[in-house]
Image (cartoon, rainbow, N blue to C red):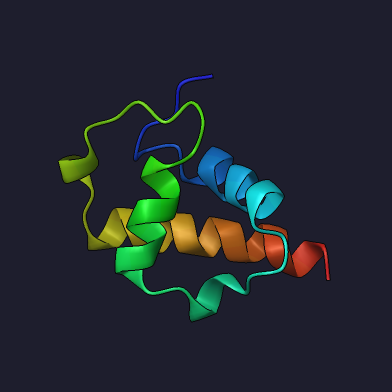
Length: 69
């Protein structure tokens, strides 16, 4: 599966699987950016992210994290 910045829900799931012990709300956007571009299957332009996209990913990840607590 190829992921892009617009796949917030799928990226949130992937981040939860890769980093299950991290509270997403404690992650700075600069670190979140690195986590996302480091995901297997991520194929978008690293420079194409912006604050609203990162926030949507963080919230999707948070929902996944919260449901696993």
